[in-house]
Length: 541
Image 1 (tube, rainbow, N blue to C red):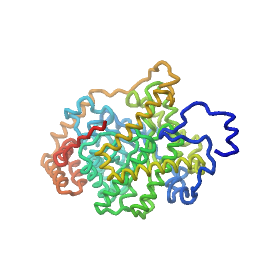
Image 2: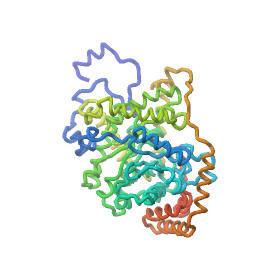
Image 3: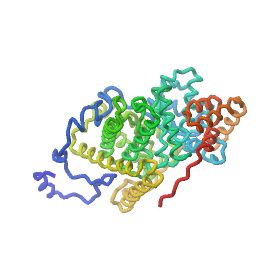
Image 4: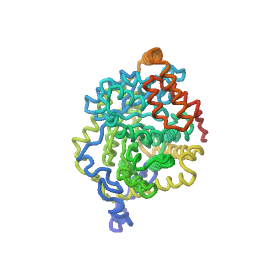
C-alpha cells in the first residue's frame, strides 16, 4: 500500500470480514504499479492473438465472433432430448452440448442390472447407433457444432456420432464439435472410470492419432478442470491439475511418435467459473500463458495454434444452492460475465434450479438469455480484454500462474499424473481445500447468501421429472436393435475391437465398425473390460 494512501486508510478501518479469495489468497486493500515489480508488458501481456496469449487467443475476440452459446442438455429418451435440442436452437443457441446418463457414462446398456432406476435420469441414454440416430434427428451435423460429455466410453460414443453422419452421406472433414474424452480427471474427481489409468489414456491417444486425419475440425479432447473444481478444488488447484493432465496427454502422444503440431491444435479445455469474480478472470489469463510457454519451450511446438489454449467454460453448479434458488440467476450472470471477461470461446450457463432436479425448459431458457444479454446489451463484447493493465488483475494473474506452476512441478517431481492418482495426491489436496471452505461457511467466515445468512422460508418452484417409462422405452429399442442387426457383422466387429486392443492397434476403426454393426455400448465396453480389466480406486483417508 502506498505511503500516501496508508494514513487515509487507517482513518476508515476495514470491516471485519474474510477478504481472502476462494484459493485462500488474501488480497491487499489497494494495488499500484509497485505491485507489478518485474512485470514486463511485452513478455507477460502482449497483444490478443499473439504469444503468450494472456489477452486472448484471437486478435479481434468477440468483435469478430461471439463465444459459442452451448447449453448442456440431455435427459430421458433420445427423442425427449432431441426435442430440447431443437427448442434451444430455436431460442438462439449456437452449439449443442450433450449430457449422457450414468449408465452410458459407465459403459452399461439400458437393460443392464446396474442401470436399473438410472436410465435417462442425469442425461440421455445412448446404448447403440439407433439411439444416436434418434438423438440427432433433424439436425445437420455439418451445420451444428456438437459437444459430448463422455469419457471412459468416449471412443465408442464418438464413433456412433460419426457413423450417424456417414449414414447421412456427410463429409467428415466438415464435422465440428468437441469430445470431452478426459479420463485423467475422472480418476482425480468425477470417478466415472472403467479401466486402469494406463490403458484408459491409451484409448485417449488413439483419438489424438485418428482424429486429425479423419475428422480434422473436431476437438478430440476437452481437458476438464470443471469437475475438479466441482469436487472441491480451489481455482489454483483446478488450473494446475488440469494443465498437468493436458501435459500428460501431450507427453503420451509424443511417446507414440505423433507430431505435436498435428494434434495439439485440436486440444481444448473446459473450466469452471465460480463466484470469485477477479480470481476467475485471472485464472483464464494465467492458463493461456502457462500453456503457451510450456508448449513452446518445453515441448517444442512451433505451430501458433498449438500454443493457443482454447476453452469452453461453465458456471459453477456447485455454487448454486437449493435454498432460495432464484438467487442463482444472479450468481450465474456474474460467473458468466467473468468467463467472458476471461476470454472463453464457448460458454454454458447453469439453470437456477439445477440443485433440485434437471432444469426445466423455462429455467434453461433464462440461462441462455443471460448469455445473450451479456453479449448484446452490456458492451463487454466490444473491447478485447478490457481489464488488461489493471494492477490487481495483472498481479492476481501472476500470483495464480506462480502457484499453479508450483503444483505442476510438484506433480512432475512425484512421477507424473498417473503416479499422483495412484498415491491419492489429488484427492488429498482437494479434500483439504473442500474441508477448509466448508468450515469457513459453517463459521460464517464466508457468507453464502440464503444459506448461512439472509435466510428465509423455502420457496417452491416447478421441477423437471424424468418419466420412469423411459427405461422401458430404451430397453425396447435396444432389444429391437439386437433382433434386427446382422449377427455376423456384429460378431466380426467385436472381434476386430478385441484384436485391436490386444495387439496395440488404434481402436477407432474398430469402434466405427462396431457402431455401423449396431453393437451396443455395453457389448463394446465388455470386450475391453476383458482385455484391460476394471480399475478399483485406493481409498484415501
